[in-house]
Image 1: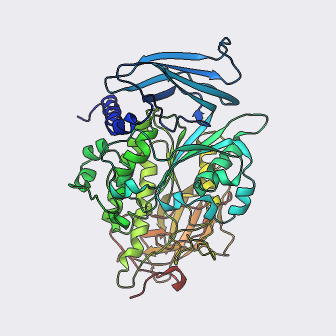
Image 2 (image 1 turned 30 degrees about the vertical axis):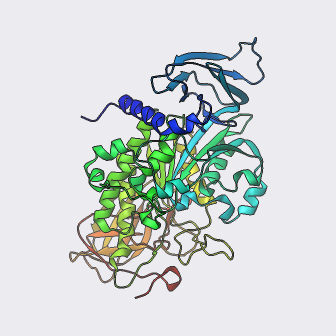
Length: 544
């Protein structure tokens, strides 16, 4: 039987104390993690969990008060006293508050020591995770100058931390740490404060902020950045969950690599559980509304078997993070991998299909795990080359136009979390049948009808197969508000259809009248041959 989560939390607290003991001997005994520091945004309408370290068995008093209050004014003032355990760890819960622009102070006292955290706001908090396309800093994305110049929202804030420290590169921790490295809260009151924020996360937070703060409402919005380039999904899952999921446990390293800095996929921070220990566990159980996620390039390219493993790992990660933050089935929104064919060789055509299987696994997770949603991005601008930009690449592994990516995630949050009356999904296939030489497909999420993306005059991205199970390019036409006809002259008796089922699927252009793209799909999963269509030379980085 899996261990109880409260027992796991206690074990994490013990680990915090052990790992922090040397550092504590050089500094004040009374400590808060940096997520509880000046300028923090606290999730509204939920109990507020505060934790820290003190002298073993010491009494700790925590007071939350409006900054305008004095010691004799008890309006909206709350105090709670607890006792640290034998390792010095303590934890308290306070009542939640409604969102507002009112500022609060947090005062913590123990023995002769005291701490004060000021400029706290109650609002909406999201946590962003993933690898390089989520970590890509705002200063490097397209349109950065305008975004930096308009960073004038003091109640929109980001929590930033070191991406990877030298210590992480050489000796990643196998146990959860007490705090992240270089954690600090920054308000969007100038370009210098947000330039190092994730471009996707900032665009997401800004779009959510602007949608919530209308008609006199006062709702601070924040995003907690935690993403690392090149990281695999296994690095973001806790040791406990890794040990409980057989597929993950089998991939767990018997002996971690350590010592001198390791490069690329051998880096210490790439190993199982390492990034959870360094960059997730120290933040939990801080209150959040939900998670946004963009990751997978390090795990893709391994065929159907690799995609099946990722599906298991992704489901485990979602359960894991929800348990860590202990607030129920928090929304978890993520993006399908964008079009790219990084390092694809003509001698390895199967790699072109691997990304299609991978996106399919991502969509499976969204269908089967409650309160999740996956959003395609193949219709968004695929600009990746910009003179002087250090993230410009020889292929579109790093698309630089991140604002529409963040805004797509924000649209999902606005509709699915904040109940805006809009559509956030593109057409989703929910039925297929043969009619003569055609396949007729029916779709949901197309109340206004199906449409063609404005880049082209005709539908693209469809393939069909006959009994030989070899998919070939096909024609498609809209024949009803929710119905398509798909056919190929070379396949007189079609049995299945696939759409956008390729690594470079940016030509797939079926949308609804809201302009939202249909995710890639195949109408059955019988073993088939997908004739590899190699991308244009500009999209490739290696040749045989």
